[in-house]
Image (cartoon, rainbow, N blue to C red):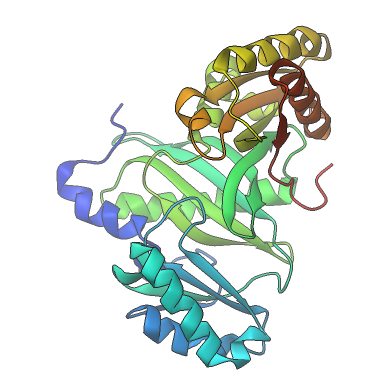
Length: 322
């Protein structure tokens, strides 16, 4: 199967991949999104934030960017000071070139001061035949916008959430089919009082794809009915860099103990990630149901601390997660 669309459809794919392009393309479709506008540049977007002053706040998004980077949040109170917003965005633009390349999306901030529940879902859209779902999960978010992993499978999402993702997915896949775009598709959503709103799509393999695909390879296309899956993209070690041999010993120790509970884990990025500052590790972990995932991750971290002698920081779980 082709992972990407045909060459003649590349311009359409690149348009849909951008936040501005998706918002414009979704107009007139049954794709629910936060109230928002496509602005000419970061200066125009900053000056217009006041339109959301009486609501929960405003979100500014560079048209391109990954993993929740190149996103700025402003509360309703902050929107009373246009000068401070302009200064903040000027500083961001000086450090992040995505703000100066292309239009900027201005949206209503969902959830007010709280971080709303956020979801991500993957599908594969072949050139011929019906599309199929790969996986859907509840995202783990750090620093209000930074994607750091997800939880999926048994008990992770409610029936209503899965139903809304499925229905919205049909509309999104239909839009891509109209534009001649096929291959991997990912969409992110936020929860607005029980109603899921689409925020962006990625016309490619996305951050959670490797975890969903691993689960599908091991447990089949209905894996989400058989196991709960945790994807951690950002386990940070401190204060030193561990050796991979020590990390491997920690996973072996964990799996020997966890197999009796129907759980297991393995690293997905290691050598390159461990050389970063701070050193980090990505892994996936499976358990019988979502309510076991938090405790299993803590047990794995304890095993890694014994094998490496180092502490670690894990990204937060979503609010109300068991």
